[in-house]
Length: 219
Image 1 (spheres, one colour):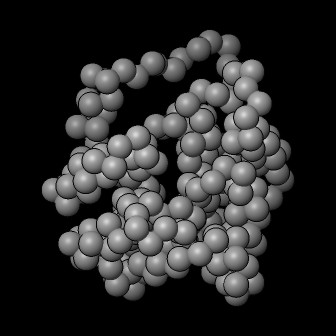
Image 2 (cartoon, rainbow, N blue to C red):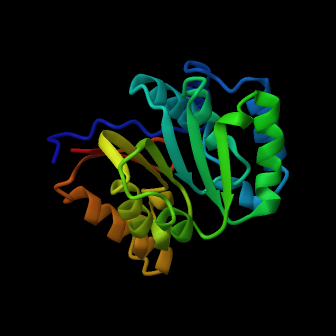
């Protein structure tokens, strides 16, 4: 453990500063953020703008061409991943909702990335198991039902190239991971965090971006 606590609490004002001093959402991304917000409380499922910018940068930094995400919602994360890929890059986007992803499709078209995104509707576990077994993915993002995280992780890791990255969202679960909570989702997140932290197949780091983002590199 660190000898001293060096993290800084981020309130609304400081968070806005962070967003403004990174690559901010462009007009299309901002429009998607605003439309998603109109869905009400469920809009919390959309990733934070600074996280999206980080994912785009990371995709470019590792030269990713083949990506996959589990949990697409209204499409912000897939849009960000697609923008980080070259012209011939592709993202497989897995989700169960045609309603939410119908919003996603509109914005992918507006952003000019629709041809890079292969949307697959259905239970993600089934979609992943139907993929070829060989390691082809450079980058993955998991942001779906928490009780499925370990399964999605195992399925993706087997299909990830050496040196490839898996990004996993909500690993702090609004702080509940360190609270005496026993609800199924919190329990599942804790189990996932514990498992990947000691998994010898990967390098693991957890970042306090938005609701917590774990980055796993396949050894």
